[in-house]
Image (cartoon, rainbow, N blue to C red; front, top):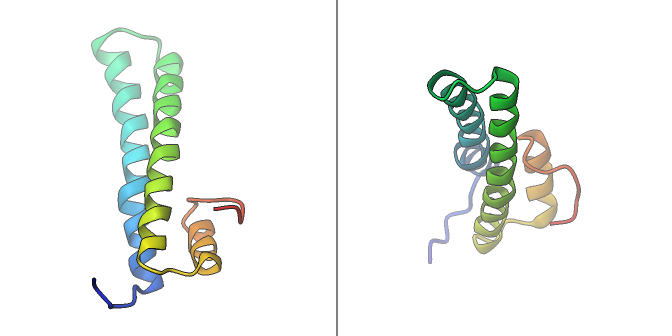
Length: 93
């Protein structure tokens, strides 16, 4: 097992790369893809993208939390980092 302590930046960056960046890409790609290639109204296409992005966010933020907990990151520290990175809003992990 790796005993290297993760910095706040490492935890934050992993969250951004595994949670927020893919969510934004899902919203943009689905929204524009549906509206351009399948002639879906843009607002409806974006709504579908947001819904799919939200579903992905729900799954990926749980994986981010589990990964950090497995690496012995304190829950209070994780909540603090999660709020700054817009991953979590409450203290219930």
